[in-house]
Amino acid sequence: MGDILGCYRKYATFSGRARRREYWLFTLVQTVAWIAITVLLDALRQPSGNPAEAIAVLWMVANLLPGLAVTVRRLHDTGHGGWWALLPLVPAIGSIWLLVLLVRKGTAGTNGFGGDPLSAATSAAAPPPLWQQDPSPPQPPESPPWIRPEPVVVRLPDANPPAGAEAATALLEPGARPSASAAADRTRLTGPAEIHPAGAKPAGSAGDPVVGWMVVVDGPGKGHWRRLGYGANDIGRSPGARVALDFGDETISRERHAVVTYDPRGLKFYVQQGEGRNLTYLDGAPVLVPQELRSGQEIVVGASRLRFIALCGADFHWGDA
Image (cartoon, rainbow, N blue to C red; front, side, top):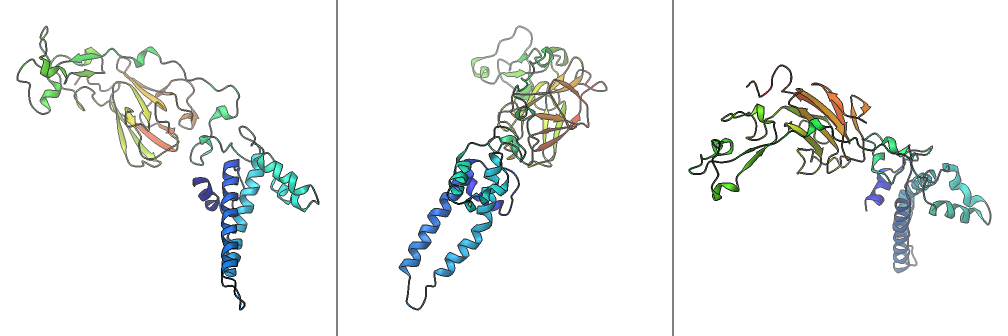
């Protein structure tokens, strides 16, 4: 259904490419509609004239331009110019030759008429991935050791645990053990031990203090923000992602499109490409290896542009709070 509606949205668009599915679904709909109109004309035929003939004329006029446009785009997909649509004017073999071109598989990757329509990277809102132009796509870099901080385990008290928000940050005395009822509420912190002395209550959620923010400044989620925590912050459309950009941007991968990491020892932020098919861009340049991320810089994931705002760094961190 989306391919058929796409032909009408591109009503008079002769540039770009159309895959075989888009062209033949549109052709099928046109054929079925014309058969239905023909049957209607025969059923309503009267000696004084047929009022349904006006419907047939309107249908032909309304669908002439989108039909010609999708044919030209289909020819572009095979690497041929739009003038090849005039092949039926060649006697005997012209129509057969055009049919062969229309059923052929499109050119793989980018050709002289645009990107491959089979790839999600040809979305107008997102830059095309570099590996569609290169037969040897780059592999995501291995995660450096500084994105895997040692976790700290925080357990609730054995008896009479505090109520409300206090229960989330209460710590046991050395050597104490939680009761069975409290075991299910254990919280695992992601920050290194040296920044969480016993009894401390860092800002943000109990086990994951905020260290910065990613603000959507352009794209479907414009105006929204997501918090960053210690260690690796994976960005994706999935609600389970640490930085969940679930605003309808389908060009963002569901899992680990990119990763923003805070190093609590070096007090620096880094950004790196994740497992997403589309690339991540930092200030307009593709992120092919981990790069340092500074407050105020912008990254592009899919069709969304994010501005990074740092809280922690050389002038402040939760170890001093």
